Amino acid sequence: MTDLSHLAQPGTQIAVRVTPRASRNAVILDGEAIRITVTTVPEDGKANAAVVKLLAKALGVAKSRLVLVRGATGRDKIFRLD
Image 1: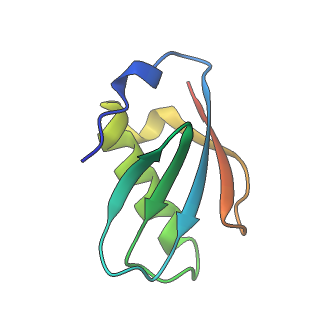
Image 2 (image 1 turned 180 degrees about the horizontal axis):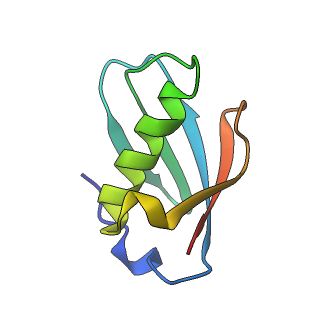
Image 3 (image 1 turned 90 degrees about the horizontal axis):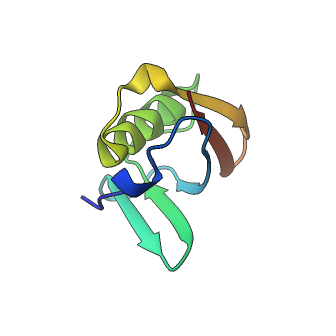
């Protein structure tokens, strides 16, 4: 698991690129970009919930502190840390 705890500051906006239906769950730091792969399907917010869970674990914060600002139905998402 990639450690993103250096980004865990209140008010930080985190841009991620999501790949649903992947072979495994992973958080990948590719230069400045954060890519998250999840095994769940993008139906009824299941993939978004899996992304929040993985991102919160990588940041070392509670899931409830992450707010999806933009990209609920797209692959590119922006989260804000409250």
